[in-house]
Amino acid sequence: MKAVQALLSLTALATSQAFTTPMSARIAHSQLSPPTPSTTALSVFEGAPEEEIPPELTAFAETLTDVSILGLRLGTCALMVHHGVDKLDHVEGFSANVVARFFGFLPGPPAFWTVSAAATQVAGAGLLAVGVLARPVALSMMATMVVAVTFHLLNTGAQGFPLGVPAEHSYNFELAAMYVGVLAYFAVAGAGAYSVDEKLLGGELQFYQRALGKVFSKDE
Image 1 (cartoon, helix red, strand yellow):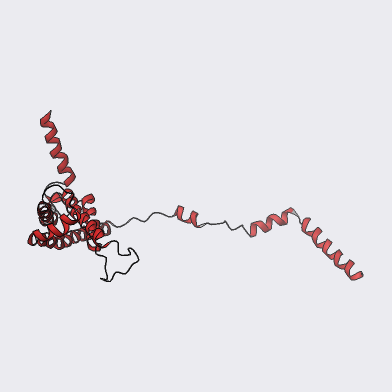
Image 2 (cartoon, rainbow, N blue to C red; image 1 turned 180 degrees about the vertical axis):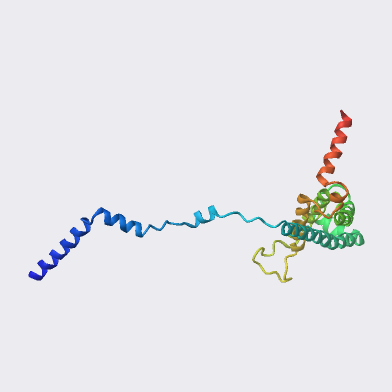
């Protein structure tokens, strides 16, 4: 019992000393040990200066992008030509087995649509390769590939897309669908920096704007 009383007495003494520490001692202690300011990651980044990208690096990235677009455009057109040539070599077969069979609702003779698609793919590939009126040309070429995707879906179905593994190791509509995606890009973005549209016509959209301006100014 005496031991417990002694322990309680020591505890009370320590507590009273803590609350009766002179104010001067507390101030001195605070001066000797200044509080460490709290630093957050946000405050560090807010005060950090923004690093400027070197203009040489920007110019290199832009040139690399333009060259890549040129390569994509030339590669697409080089692969597109044979689709048109094949149709011209087999007008009757394509007209009977594809146009008449799956697109019989189209007006006019099937051979007209076969030759039209072939001409669009051959001439369009040449025009898009050099970058002349790229947007409407790419859009017309894309239309032929949309028809090709439709044909394959009607003929063989989706073949378990997207997770199915066809016996032919690729979907029949796969190539045409990839053409659609690439040509859609050029139909929206244009041929790119290395093209007749940009180098000789002063920009494709600007060319259309000037042409329309001349037409409407004559009407007035």
